Image 1 (cartoon, one colour):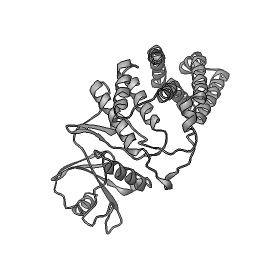
Image 2 (cartoon, rainbow, N blue to C red):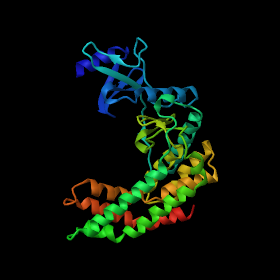
Image 3 (cartoon, one colour):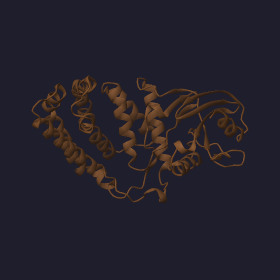
Image 4 (tube, helix red, strand yellow):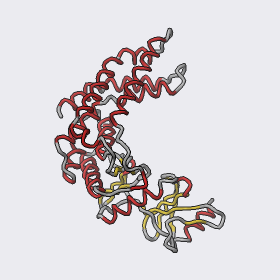
Length: 323
C-alpha cells in the first residue's frame, strides 16, 4: 500500500515530509501545507455532490474547507495503473473545536451561520430536491417506538435493573415526546418549510468537523451534505454542546449568539430550535439501542447512561424553560 501511496502522491508533485493515519486516510505534511490522502472507494457515491457544494462555498467566500486538490492533469481523482483510485484534499493544522470554550462555541456558531448564508439559494437538482422534510413523521415514528419498547418491557416477567429504571421514567419522557410532536405540528416556521426541501445543509456539523486554526475556523466532514433543514445543523451542534456542558445556558447561548451574528435568527426559527431540543432524544436513543440489541444482555454502561440522562433532566428543563 505504501508504494501505491507514493505513486499517487507523485501525481501531485508534492514533497512529503511526514505522514500518519487519520480521518480515514493519511495526513501528509507537505511543502505546500497539510493534505489528506484517501482511497476513493472509502468516499462513496457522495463525492460529486460534496464537490459541487464545496465549489459553491469557495466561490461565495467560504474558503476554509477541505476541498479537493487536483492532480497534475487537473483531475480530482487519481487512478493508478493497478486500478486503485486516490483523492487528495486540502487540510488544516489546528485543534478540534473545544466545547468547553465559550469563544470556540461562538466562533462555531458564527461559522455555521456564514456557511448557511453562503448556501442560500444554491441547488443540487440531481440529489433529491423536492423531498419532504419528514421531521414531524420522524417524531411520530420515534414516539411509536417508545410506546412499543415500553409495552415489551412491562410484559417481561423477569426484568433487569435497566428495564425497571426505564419503565419508571417512561411516562415523563413519553409525554414530553408527544408534546414536542404536537408543538412541531403547530409551529408556524415548520409549516413554512414542511414542503419540498430546497436548502442545503452541512449534515454533520459537530466539533470533530471543526478545526480551530490561527486563521479562523476550518470546516470539514461534508460527507452527508445535501438537502435538509439548515436549523437541524444548529440544533445538532447545540445538543452535543449542551450535553457536554450539562445543559449550561451560557454554552447554548454562545452558539446561538454566534450564529445570529452571521445569519439573523427570527422568533419563529428560535421556536423550532426549542421544539427540537425539547424532544427527549437521548432517552429515545437508549430505548432504540435496547430494542436493537440482545435484550438478555445489557451492559452496566447502558444503565449508567440512562441514569446520567435522568440526573441532567432538571438542568435540561431549566435551559428550555428560559428560552
